[in-house]
Image (cartoon, rainbow, N blue to C red; front, side):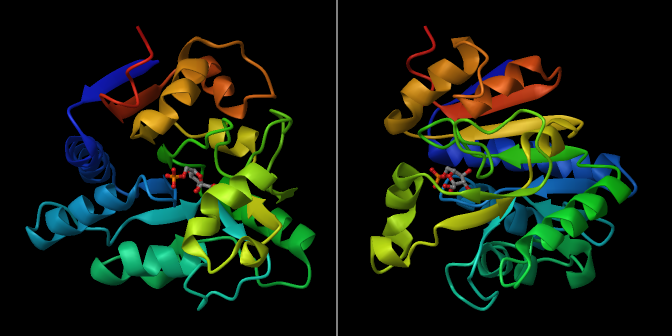
Amino acid sequence: MEILKCKDYADMSEKAAELIVNTINGLQKPVLGLATGSTPEGLYRNLIKAYKKNAVSFVNATTFNLDEYVGLREDDPNSYKYYMREKLFDAVDISVEHTHVPNGDTGNPEEECVRYEKQIRDAGYADLQVLGLGLNGHIGFNEPGSSFDTKTHTVDLDLSTRKANARFFDSLEQVPEQAITMGISTIMHGEKIVLLVSGINKADAVKKLVHGEITEEFPASVLQQHGNVIVIGDEAALSKLG
Ligand SMILES: O=P(O)(O)OC[C@H]1O[C@](O)(CO)[C@@H](O)[C@@H]1O
């Protein structure tokens, strides 16, 4: 696992954007796996900057997002579809048919999971998968205890995850209790994985990810088994690596 130590959040976001721009420019039809949360916001701002400077075009890119809340309409400001449109898609030249986010606003989440997994598989899985890291080690919304064999599936969110994400909602009660997420095995099919971490509150989780036991109780530890992972983090998040 490669570790890239950055000065701060701005530096982390620039380095991650550089890597993604190079990947897009190096492939004819790049497939990107994308993440939400606070951490990649700076990355998306830098990708928009690069697009505006004509350093990159998304016209041949296809994207698949990791996850979506169950029960939120896509025009709900807390849905991840809305987040992606606001933070990236609407500001670059990607065609909307090439952007994929699981549909959480469906009467049949199980069917949606099967459909989404097939779409990713048919696209050949991600050339580059961006990940954030939950405090409890979740990647996507694969909470502790998720089997490493999972494909796209529905999950019950941990209370700790709902509390961490309550900052985006008016109250904890409004945070959905379920989500659809790419599974660990779907994520592990990515050719290259770029995990972004920032801030001292992630330092313990990063230490477990890099040096801890490989266990389903800490889902991100599975990345130790992937041959092409880069962790891009600021000094605070990487401060407990020794
Ligand atoms: O970047 P943040 O906001 O710390 O979130 C970390 C992870 O938690 C989630 O927001 C889900 O709780 C993921 O989407 C993200 O990768």
